[in-house]
Length: 356
Image (cartoon, rainbow, N blue to C red; front, side):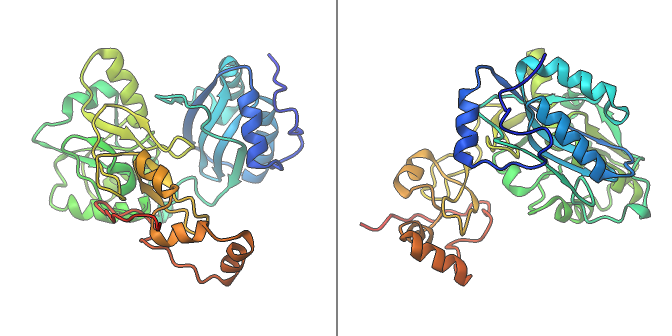
């Protein structure tokens, strides 16, 4: 089955050249549905740049959009594909040695669009963890538990349940009773978790994250540090939500699962665990500040987004009122300071009203 809805992108072009508006128009004009998928795998690549070129050409021909990281250690991908080409996409992966039978996690919710373009980057690692992989065996990972095995253990008094995600992810959704490290990055989370688990080397440890990739590295790291019974949720929160729903069991994960695409979140349960940073009412709606000089990720309810033009602070409100020439002058000066911290801090509520 062929694909030509993105014929504007030549198969030989290895980057996008179209504006955001053009890309949005193209997706809205597509006469088919899309599926959002995520997958990863650790393996050894001798030439990641060559692999990047091959994947870009082949994925582009299949109408794949998304964000993909390739490194000598493997691949980490979040993509959107035409739904009718799912089998073609799987067949392509199965024909490639490194990707054969690779588990694909399908999103819980399918929005109007999760990605606008295809972006494939070569990096030193597919996951920024700050670890020297030469110091321990990254293949010696924890025990993989399927969704129902994990589900039965959540809430047990003799297990340590650890969320390996960042604070802006955990604040809108998490498993009941989980330890939530207040970290900005996965790199920061590892030492925090290790300190929290000190003295629990013989206890059963349960790790979970969005799709599983962070737990792969975290479980190997903890085993290297002497923790003996390390376990991880296979397929992550995404797979858990699918399987628990099919089983008819009540989800022990509450709230929203934060995702790194245009959706910024997919709802697992109706529970709202966080508050609007502008007015304090219950809300778990993440957005990026509309001021391009700030672009901070924060939580804001729809009412405040409407009245405050989707910005995080009075200072950012002032900036978006500037004439284009003044905005560019401020941008070039490099003197802009955001009204709040660059990233959202849990519980940060700063009520303010736009100037009359």
